[in-house]
Amino acid sequence: MKKTDLLLLPFGILFILGCQQVPDSVRSDIPIIDSENADTGVVECTAASDCVVGGCSGTVCQNKDAPPVFTTCEYREEYACYESIDCGCVAGKCQWETTSEFEQCVEKARS
Image (cartoon, rainbow, N blue to C red; front, side, top):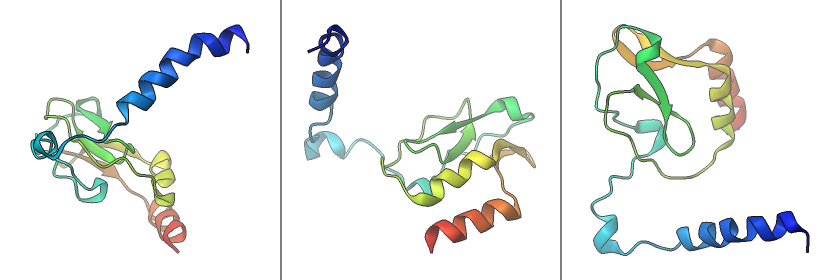
């Protein structure tokens, strides 16, 4: 075993321990939101710098001052399409600046 493997071993153990199932009594207090239908607690914005990308899969566009949105940690092929668009301030709200290319990418990924 290499030295680097030994150095990384504690992180692997922590990762595995961190992936344990959370008891229902705790889980009921954590809002889990579908990435595509996330209600980001709309907070108005004036510039793109007011907006940040969030959610486990990076598919939530929200105001940096809004409470964080917790989404399910899943990956869908269409999530790669989000890399081609920006999260910005549009009409006073943080939202994805979608394009026709983005829409086509999502459609293709879903088929």
